[in-house]
Image (tube, rainbow, N blue to C red; front, side):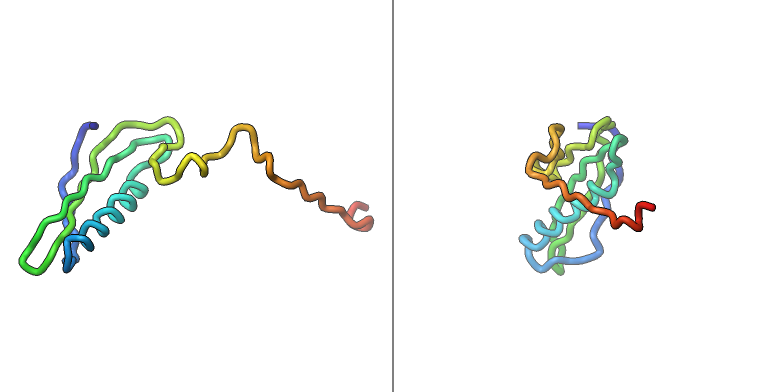
Length: 105
């Protein structure tokens, strides 16, 4: 993994169950990764942990520098099916718009 590690950020919300805290940790990981990583620039991995308190469960996270990216990022938020094809969209349809004679003059 990469270089510098930032301090942990702790969620302000308590979760009643471990499962709900794990779900929130996944959402935080995806959201923070998208917010902090810049296309064609610095990329960050988000580490999350959950821990139990007296009132419930909490989530904490931090970002870890993963390097620089010169491409689209390949952050796995989209699949191969969503990546644009270099050959173009072969199933597309060309719609021709006919202009009225008065629009041309």
